[in-house]
Image (cartoon, rainbow, N blue to C red):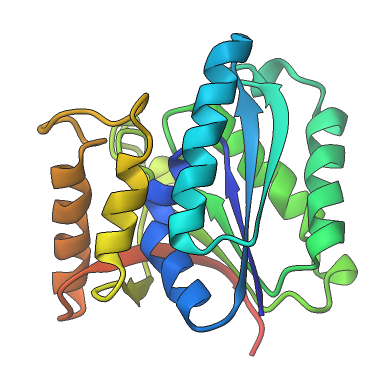
Length: 216
């Protein structure tokens, strides 16, 4: 199978899907990551992308796409520009399973990526696509205004007990992004969330998702 993960910003994919990405890779599936935005400082962009590629290598990612759209400015970017770039990746990979950010996250870039991804993933143009899942991103999903429309309500769990170590190592590659506990983007918080999600389904560590579409 081909697994495609859309990340609005560098490291979102590791926070939300890192353990599951490693799990799929270990099972022999092809894992791809599309990082949608970049900043306007070329030196910092290069550094963060190098961190991402190092993390992705640990997780067994086959290929990473950097779209270079403006960070924190997707709401002000023509929709056609976002849609066309995301569609190019979908048409190239033709994924069987896709992970997208949760549309209720605090950062509006997440919602824009979700909407554009869903446009590109229309079932008529993707007969090979079997499932779409939304993932949670620490410091984005849980920090937004607590309304029904923003709520992340998981209904799918992935047992990452065997790959939580790789997820933590991958996140530790992002020296520009990692924080100290009790910040949610810390290794301690990431592991704590995995234990909490795992306890929900009686496994040691898990990532949780919202099922957006599934074809059996």
